[in-house]
Image (cartoon, rainbow, N blue to C red; front, side, top):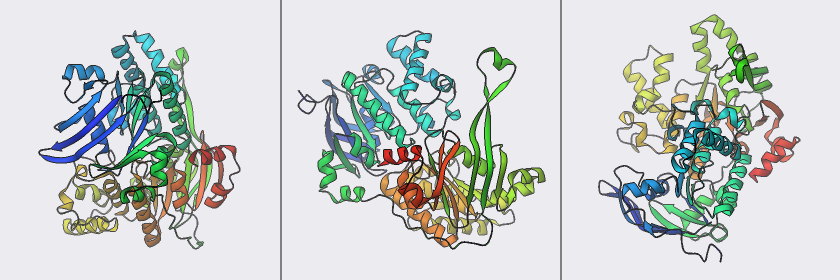
Length: 537
C-alpha cells in the first residue's frame, strides 16, 4: 500500500491560532501520511511557522483551537507530561534560527549527545559516539573536532547542520522542519535531502517542510500547501501546483526569482576600491593529545587570495559552507588578523592599525557590512533611531540631535521605511518588523555614514522569495544611485546571477576560479564550479 493510501500519520483539522483574541491562523486543515513530504510555503508572516510550532504547543500565550491527531491522539488536548514524551521522540523539530535554538553554554556534541541520553538511555560515551556519527551524516567537516565546538565557533551552515543532527538523533516518526536549509549551500542541501530520504526509507518518517525555497519544494516535496495571511489558499501535488497554479498568490510566489537590473559601470581611472594580494587568514587550534599542551596548531581559512573590486561593481564570492567566504569578508572589514596585502581605497589595514585610532576610524567608515541574520544583528533593546544612528554617533560626533534624527529619517526613506507606513517608526523596536523589513533596517544602518564598499554576507538567505526579490531590487537601485561597490558573500547562484559583475569561487580556503559572471556561470572551467552550478539547476 502506498503512503497516499495509508491512514494519515498527522491529521490537522480547523487549526486556529490567536493572541489576545486576535486570530492569526484561520481554520487551516491538512494531512501528512507515513513517509510523505508535505511543504508549507508562504511569505514571512503567513502563519506557516507558528502553525507548525503550535502542533507541539511551543508558542507561549497562543490560543490554539482545532484538532491535530497524531497516531490516534489529539496533540492539542494531550496533558503536558504525555506531550513532553512525544516531543523529540516521535515528533522532532528543526528550528529556523540555530543561533538562538542552540545553547551557547554547551558544545554542539554535548547537546546532541544529551538527546540520546534522555530519549534512548545511552551512556555518556555511547551518546557522544552517536552524536559524532550524526554530525558526520549531515556532512559537517571534521565531525570529531566540530563536536567539541560551541555554536558561536561554527559557521551559519555548520550550526544549521548541528541543529539537523540533533533533530534527527533518535529517528522520529514526524519531522517538523522550519527552513532547514536556509543557511546551507546548494551542494549541502542535496546531502541533507538525501539524508532525510534515507531516514524516510528506513523508518517511514514523514516531513512537514516549512520553507520559502520553491526550488527545494520542487525537488523534495510530494505535496504542497500554500499559505497567505493565515489561510491555506491552495494545496495539491507538487507537479500539479507548479505546472498550473490556480490561485494568484501561488502564481506570485512562482514568479519571484531574482531579476538582474544592474548597471555596467564605466571603467574608472582610479585604482580598485578593494584589493587583496596573497591574502592569508589562519586561526590557532588545539592540537590533539599531549602535543596540545606545548604548542598550538593552525587552521588556514583563506589561502593566498588575490582579488580586486572596482567602483560601482559587485564582486560575488560563492562556495560551500566552510570554504572561507565569510572569513574573507571579516578580513576585508578589518576584524581578523591576516597576512599578505589588503587595501581599502589604497590604504592597508596594517598601515591603519599601526597609525592608530583615527586612521582605523577613517578606514572603517569606507567599509560597512550587512549581516546574514537580521534577527540577531539588530539589538532588541535599542529603538530604530538608536540602531540606525549608531554610526553617526561614532563617526560624526558634531551632529546635534535634530540633525541626526533627520539623517536617520532620510536613510530609512532610502530603503523604503517611512513614518507614513510605520507610525512612530523611530521609537519602535526590531521585533515589531518582519524579516525583510529588519534587513532594510540593517541596510539603512550601514548606509547612513555613506560608505564606499558594502560587504553583504548572505543578505537574503533568511528571507522568503518575494522579500528576497524586493531586497535585491533595493540593493541594485542603491548601487545605481549611489555608486556603491558590493562584496557579495552567498551560496545562492540565483543571487550571483542577479547581482554580480565578477565572481570568485572558493573551496577549502582557495580561490579555484574567478572571472566575469558570464564566464563563471555560462562556461565554468573548474569541476567544483560545475558541481555547484549543477546542484543549483
